[in-house]
Image (cartoon, rainbow, N blue to C red):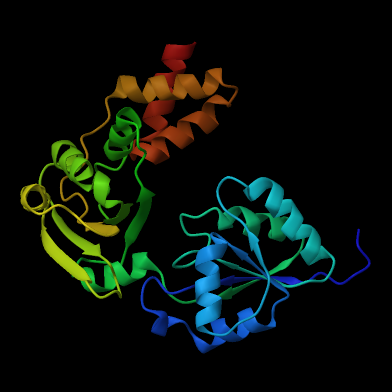
Length: 280
């Protein structure tokens, strides 16, 4: 273990479009740390040049996060302080920065939030949707089978849902959502804080029709109304099959019953008796 007192990791949110949103505290933090871990050092350089900040950068992104994470940690443990930034928004939110934060936390390095822009919260704030409770789903998987499985998984989610989507995938995603869920209200927020910012409030069917005629441009945040229908009850045989699978995997019968009953709102006592009959 190093004899030096460890430095700190600062998680610094950067503007998602308008550089005027960069906070004085964020600027001060980048000016005072020893080095900066950036998702793309070219994008980072533009930000640093804008605010006349002269600090060295280290590349840290999806495909080098393991090796660079260990390297960044070693420097912090030696006493240096580091700020992590993404191209836009808050690091660690649908972003590999979460691994660096976890790595530092595991090694007793203090992690400090320097909050600012987040596309999720910005989109929710202008969507007009209920946002007292919501769920952030990030990007959908690219392969069709996995994407449809994800949509089926959240089909009966009652909270407002937030997704990220790229313009070239938007039409396919909207069509899949409409087919899987039926029609729902949606707010499509794009280019938030930028010159061509737009919040298009419509329905899934309306969005599908609109983008057939108007090719989507810019990065999108989709804010979608939750399910208003009750989820269909799970058949007793399905519940028992889930219990049996857990027991086969090594879980005690009572623990398996409690878990399945809790997940589906079923009677624990009834399910336990049925499981005893089936598994005896």
